[in-house]
Image 1 (cartoon, rainbow, N blue to C red):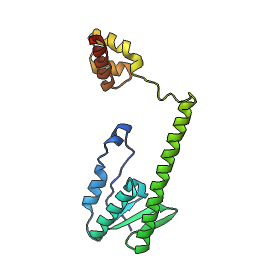
Image 2 (spheres, rainbow, N blue to C red; image 1 turned 90 degrees about the vertical axis):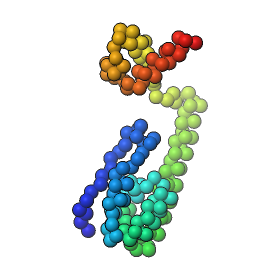
Image 3 (cartoon, rainbow, N blue to C red; image 1 turned 90 degrees about the horizontal axis):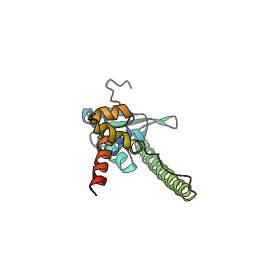
Amino acid sequence: MKPNVFFTSTRMSRWARSMPTRDQLNQALAFLREGDALVVTKPDRLARNTAELLTIEADLTARKIGLVVLSIGGERIDTRSATSRLILTILGGVAEWERKIMLERQKAGIASAKAAGKYQGRAPTARAKAAEIARLAAEGVTREETAARLGIGVASVYRILAETRHRAAA
């Protein structure tokens, strides 16, 4: 099987993950025609959970499009066979379970560290520069220039200035 069209997805930024649009996946799914096969490296690159994986697989099957997953324990799964569909469903469920268990352990570890006084969270970077931001704003430096000089985001500059105004008004 030699693919002739590639759709790639790269790791999203922390901000983008909160509102992902998955444009490349949507383009790939729209591009596929009857008799094609969608080839993915891992199921977790295709879907966020088992329900989404099964929904995508069912849509592809209804459109007579195959789904091929390349990296399942060194084996290749091709959902054009009933056995492969079963294996994909089971492995999708296991992957989702594994992710939820990992998140539970992470939450427990954070709670334990907080109780022991060892977990403080990330140190605030922009708020530590509030005095410098206020000084630059008073000098007439633009918000964008302030952000660039201090190595912080423009949104942080606006937020800190708004907080400063709010405190001054109170």
